[in-house]
Length: 525
Image 1 (cartoon, rainbow, N blue to C red):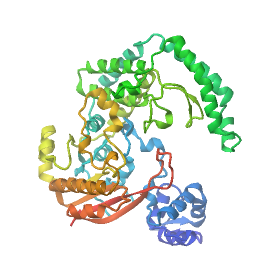
Image 2: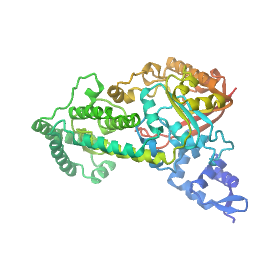
Image 3: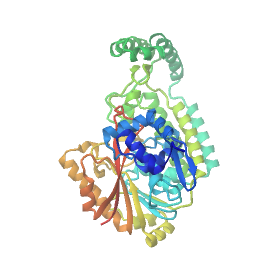
């Protein structure tokens, strides 16, 4: 028993061992997720010093220690969710469509789930409560709150965000959905805009495979790069030019039309001609569907498809630079890659994946009410808009009011939210409302942009608090590097009662430097 410590003792031991503060909740986290073995002893839980030392000497343990050295001892590692696999953080409908800047569902669960012991002393929300997300984006908060039996309201100025969120929360006739998806998929797969494309791609793929096997053998080539036995930049450019001759000869041989290089229209500029034709054909088939819910989810599948089929390099998919309509050396895959010439394979894959995810969520979805409102959260009348969508929910809302908010406001000067889905706005004809975005990338991060951001977020909170109960709980996930939120809280008539600083792991950006964000807990002043 000499090696066994209580949670409190383990916290003290680990703090001494690492020469930095390790909280009791941090030790509880290690026990909860099986990082260290749990030993029962009467009314107490014990952990073994040997297990603790082994963890802190491991990769994850070292990473935690190193991140705290860089970002501070106040980093809450329990909120890293480093025990999760990607399939956990993108479970069921959370991966229906890509969306930059969304948080993982487990972060929502941690703060609003009243069923689980998440090492908190308080439970902020319970089933039957109403939760609001005034920047709902792709609907993560709404989906998780519904799963946990809470009523939810989501507001977003983007019409496309509204569509993504609605399709996640719809109750579908799953048999009809699966049948319609299969029929549409088959029609798209059988469609031929250019009869030469399939033969051309078959020929191109064979030449590429032979070339890559000869000049970029895996893993031998990657091994040489890591050991600097080869100048990757010089070698890659040389071989890229060499294969480009083969590619251009094939383009001429089969008479393949590429794209309108100088087009202002997004779809014409960023898609190879055959892909553009297939997109138009697919959309025409979807518009014929009579069931509105199925029509909308098929539109989301098509949108997800065309996002993946843009004429860009693999490493620039998230941030488009210039249309890529020729073969190229791929820095991500370390070989020659090609642009996409057909949507068929992608649509088929995403269609099957979407049906699978909707079925999985249907087993977890509750009968809780929800409303998704495409509006400006600074001015929207939440009672009025909810009544338009769900009268029964509106009655509950007026009686109970909203218990609290869980949201991630846009970060100042980081993302243009309409522009990230420009392809969808172009295809579906949705009206863009870029001028109503708060803190968009195009406004920058200067003093004027920050003042505008403070004003915008404050107005959202001031408008929303009219619909909140007096003893509300507001949680805002933010990267507040300019320390704007104390003033935002002050202007909103709220006070910051707690802050949770979390490490952001598994980011998609190339810069993998330690990075954190803060969850601000606000209450009535």
